[in-house]
Image (spheres, rainbow, N blue to C red):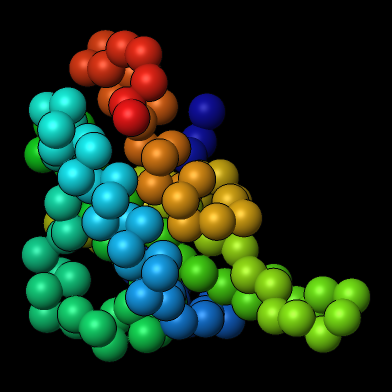
Length: 134
């Protein structure tokens, strides 16, 4: 099976991104705290320290897991207009390595909360977590 990896630059060039809002960031931080409490740390990738708020304003969230040895890229994109003109969005997920500059596309989510909690499925698959992480 040939898996397709894309460099970060290509992902950013080909997506029409929307800003990640304050409430979404608070949701991410809450999930990061829950995971840390269970010994399953998810951290902001060091690249987020250099991009900071600008990265979030550009619709990009990059996380890393030292236990898994993987990086996670979440991109908030334009999902079109709803029936009553409301802006819709989707969260694209990617898993890979910043060092190798290769990310494989993952699931598309409707919310950042579900996207972040999906990392817990990887912890379970690796045998690092069992049961709910609440």
